Image (cartoon, helix red, strand yellow):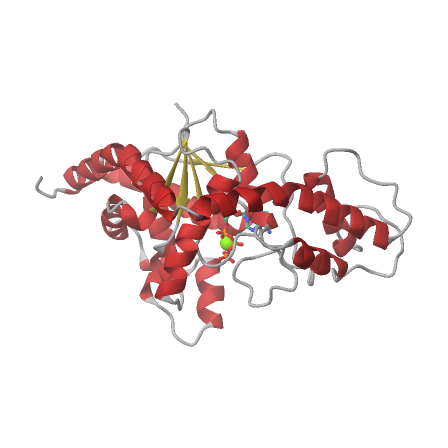
Length: 320
Ligand code: ATP
Ligand code: MG
């Protein structure tokens, strides 16, 4: 039996890249048992504002549902609300080397970029390993940014099994097929991200139509003057084409100018985001409903998670 886990950090507003790269594949694969996890514990690894975090966590849960994640088929959880994640995190820290964590690229980059570094930033990938292993997940959709962390998860699980006896399912990283990596519209050399300070290149899933229109109108292009896929020489135009292809329900073009490309992209994005925005507005009228879905998700996954922790404790020699 296959089980998948897809994580979303509540570090800001979900964007078009999250939708195309992660949420849609999750919705498309709902016949496979899946967990959609809001990684609110991971959001504590960097400077954060408690009120903002609470709001973001609820917003991510609401947007996931608005975008078609069906809580009857996919458990939607926050990792902080299932304490087995934290317990397994500590146990796995006792099976991970300092050097293994310290050489993670994300840790190096994020710690170099900030004045103070939380210890949890170093152990972030161990928490991610716990998120995956606690639910016995065998498939984890990962983009390039998380592939090193998934490799560490596999190393920890394999070593633990060899040293203390078979305890964990060793997960496989899977790459969602046909999903584009969406780039920042203002700087198409880097991916669209929740956490980049400037919103100029980001299309938020809840942005009003006027904001979407303006963001796309200002998207960086080039002086080549031809609409074609050439990520090397025309990253901005290629990105707009990828967005258009992912959002349009018919073959796009012909394009007589970049202006036509941008107008078509704007219409296509609006046709996808309009219904999500409307459903989000409905769901937001009853925040209790979303809270209840998170509680149900927790109740659904907890028995298996508790069993994994029990197995791990026993393997390590802790009393039951
Ligand atoms: P942060 O900047 O806080 O890391 P993020 O935008 O990278 O935020 P995550 O919460 O880290 O978003 O990732 C959620 C999911 O969305 C992951 O599966 C990730 O691979 C996918 N994803 C993130 N950015 C993009 C993008 N630009 N294009 C396609 N998929 C993306
Ligand atoms: Mg990310």
